[in-house]
Image (cartoon, rainbow, N blue to C red; front, side, top):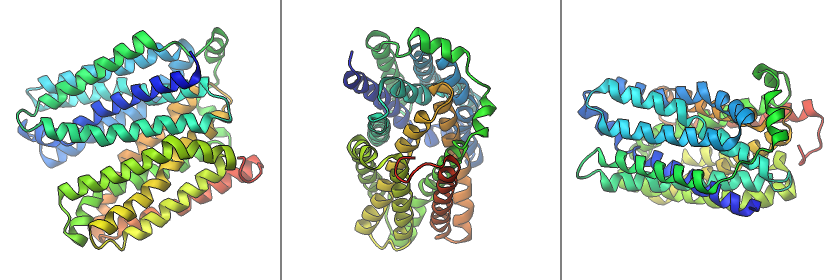
Length: 388
């Protein structure tokens, strides 16, 4: 099977995974509330999943280097399906927490394993394109999932959880029947001899993990507060916000699905990362001047376009520079992403309480810091501009 067909299968896998995940987003707060969750407990419930992803993504990445991508991916998708069915059957609040813990622990295998699979099957020249395609699948899944969840939640709040579970089971069957193992026996042998995890932090690439963390913190802070900001500044409600985030998501998916690959080929991952950070910072600045639906949609899309360039380029660059198995590298990157999603929402909420512009001012500052970290990485690796 050639790499284009495999990338198509991986796109479908991540799309279905993220649709399943996205379906429950608009429903879980109301579902938890019905089972007696306070706002604080709801916050803990949402954070639990990200904490488990942060803790276990590196472990699953390393295991995929050792035993292969396909079995680890099947474990991750099966775990996701199990967690959705457990959520649907929950009758007490503790059962929701148990389901989220199980789901976070097992599904932490999905993103690092798929990303490592892409690194296995692509040449260095096409690596950025492959990573972008996976990023586009994630983005589109997040667009369609919540919309489906909203539509099917009107009759019974448990229905979206069953739909998510079924979506995950379909994905599991797709992987089991169609996807072949990407690691050769030589690759598996190399994975068994991988260096300790902490070795990754002694190399210049450690800067790229920190860069991604800053980007994730700023994005999560925006996502947590923009609904309040748009209402306070422009009187926008949930319907308008849904359309705005859909437009932003589509723009980001288009960039990741097509533009990232072309840009990394012509400019190199280093320059694309810089462009992405600068455009994101411009987007944060423009958001401060939101006045109505049109300006909110345009300014948030500018941010989304910049943000969409960063993650695939960082993933591509990290796997090119990898001195250990791809799974270990992509697992660490997913872990830093999750850490950003743990820190970002409460930080954004705290800053918003100080002044409504502060989450976006902090986004500009974090973007500048991320750019500085990239320059530090480049100086440590002594690489030429555009081919870092």
